[in-house]
Structures are given as C-alpha cells and as structure tokens.
Image (cartoon, rainbow, N blue to C red; front, side, top):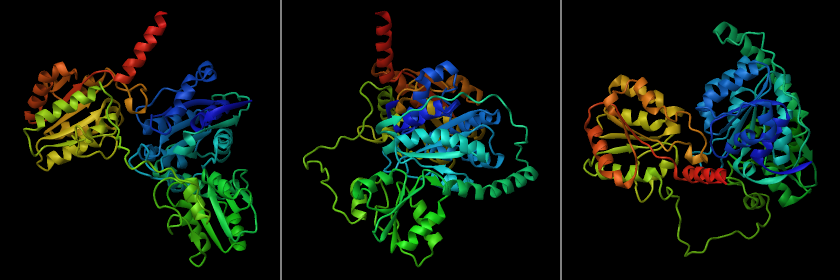
Length: 528
C-alpha cells in the first residue's frame, strides 16, 4: 500500500510499524511533525505508544534510554540544536550501550530557515562513535526506521538518523509495510553504571564495535555504487543524491552515502578510477574533510571547502548542477519593486502588549538592556518593537541578564516564554536567586508552545509555584493580563519590579491567539 507522506511522517509511520513503544521529543522545526503524527495515529493510540512531549531534549534522551533499558524500541526526536541539549546523555548512551532499539532523530536545518545555526548532526554521531543513517528520500526515511532499530539491537548501540528540512517538509509516495508487534518487556541484566572503572571497560567495548559498524556500512543497501565513463567521481550524501540524479540521470560515477561510518573501500575504489572527487552534502563539510584525510593531500577532493559548492546554505538543484559543470535552469528572482515582508507577531498576540508596556517603561532607563530567548517573542527584536538586545539559545535570557547585572548593568531584564522557561530557564533563575541578582524576569505565558504550532507546554498553570519553589520572594512574583486596557497596571508592575533590588518575576498570561481561535472552533464543532 502506498501513502503520500512528508519526510517527517514517513519517519513516524516507519517507527510505528517497526514496533515502536515510545517517542520522546521536544517540539522544534523541522522535527515537530514526527511526534504529532505518532500522537494522532490510530495504531499508536491503540497500542498506548508513549508520545507526550518532554520538557527538553535531555529529558527526552534519558527517558528513551530508560525505555531501551527495559528492552523496548524508543525514538528520540529533536532539531539539530537539541542535540546540544541532550549531548551528555547521548554521548554516554554510546558507552552504556542499549537493549531495545534506540534511534535518535536529528532534523538539521541548512540555510537556517527557523534556527540560529547550521550545525551538522553527523558530527555528533562521529563524536559518540555510533552509526548514522541519512535518507535520501521519504521511502528511505520510512524503511530506515525498521532497519535502524534492528541495527541498534544488533550492535547494542544508539543510531542517529539525520534528516534535513527539505526532506522533512516535502511529500512523496511511500510503500508501507505491515506493522510489527512491539518488543516484550525484558530489562537489561548488565550494569549501565558509568563509574570510572566500569566506564573504562565499556568504552573499550565501544571501540571494539567499530569494525562491526564499518562492516555494516560497507554492506548497507543504502550505500551503493553507480558507474559511468565520467572522470569526476561524486560522493552524494543523503538528499544530495536526488540533485545529482536530476543533473546527470544515470550517467554518473558515484558512491551514494546514506549510512556512516563512511564506506571507505567503495570511496577508494571510486577515487582510483577518477581524476578527482566532488563531495555533495547538505550541511557542513563532514564527508569532504574525512575523505581528504582518507585519500591524502595529493588527491583532489572538491566540495564546500574548495568553493565548488556554497560554504553556507542548503543544496539546491541549481548549485549542484553548477558544481557538476552543467547549466542551471532558470532561477526565480523576485521583482525589484517587491516590498520585504519580515515576520511579525500575530495581530492580537499577548506578546505585543508585553513589549509595548516594556518599551514604555524602559524609555526612562537609557542604559537598559533586554535579553531575549527562543520563541515567537524573539520577533520582539524586529520592528515595530525592537526591544531585544540578545537571543542566543534556549534559556540564555535569564543567565545573560544575571551576568550583565553581575557586571553592574541596570536595569537588566530577561524575556522568556513559558515553554522555554521550563526547558532551560529554571536553573538560571535558581542561580539568580542564590546570588540575589538584581534582574527582572518576564515569563511571557501564552499557555502553549506557540512557535512550533501550539503543543502542550510542560509548566502550564505551574509557573508561580515553580518560581516560589526556586526561592523568588512571593511578593515579587507578579501575574498580569496583557491587554491594551490593562496597560496602566502592567507598566506600573514592571516599573515597581525594576526598582526592586533583587530577583523579580512578572508573568503576563494570555492564551496564544492562534490556539484560542483553534479551541474556539473546536468548541463550536462540539456543539453541533
């Protein structure tokens, strides 16, 4: 049976049909639709597959590792920067090993469509010394789930599955197989205790598995060789394979790479019959650097580092065709008189009222700085508000505001969203409380994870209790309703808390305008 699926949906259905018992994730574009698909799938509901959102990627990774310890198959999903958050648990999971199959899905975002960097998750797989799968199309994304779980259980190691935005958010017909049963509960019997004496032995065991990983890659059905008479060899990684096929059809000397470690012998054989190699990979020059080392400095290897492909941004059929020496097709160029339309906060959004009030008060403090965070409200850095001075990573608003206050900056204000606060902001607030830092923290609570489509937020209706539990003085935990009619009250509260010499938290709370509209529509439908 065939289904028309997004790449994300192919991953999700492939996992369900491979006997998945739990998906653990924090929403982040372009990975969000994987968990949402599993949450809404009838078979996943029938089987009780765990699919509740986690507080952050680290808790997701650790919970999935616990399910694997119990002998069942688990999937962890995140966008690429989430790998930074879960890195401690992820890298150590390679040393503990796994019992039930464990796949770590990293959705990379070349061109930074909705991200703050272009980091490449293949580096994490190499860093942890575990295999990485990189599908070139939606069918492979589906098929690699069963393959990946089996490989994980065979090697006793987690498997990274890397997709990119273009694959995650495009559709194709996928041949679907019959679903397998879930694994039975069978907890691990060996120690997963990384005391130094045990960890040293387990690390040696991980190193001893490297030959088996290389063999699996050499024999993988996803790493294949195609031959022609052309004297330039091509290494086409993941989605890049499609762009090469579009340019050359079947007339290419290439190695398709969709499983790592690299199939070294295939690459050496290709190099021996070609004058040079062109490495085409979406993301950073991971393979280009490895192949340059593999073949030696005297062998010409071209790619992003040599300028044959752009150093930044995602691959396109046009820039790949150009690198292959072919004329690119017509490129769309916007009309010169087209006005730019930068993203803006939705009309009616509560964040707008927060920034309007904040700007009104801070106009009286010329030395002020506002430290922002990751979420819809990051748009407060743009016109018409232009309120934010920084936005670095999840949770950085509070800790950067604290550091600036430690340096003597006043007033030092942090703006963070509700979901981001529970993801990464709570520990920073605890630091600030312990140091009695002179900062004002605004937790802009729209009762959802708005930026990624309205998923549940882990701390909804708990933020006052969390702040009090972390030690913020009760009289300095203030709740306001961000509406234009309440502007006098909001500005008064902000001014009072800025003048307080210590940690204060203001929680403007009003439901996201998008989820409010959706919920109203659902209630109306229920009444019919």
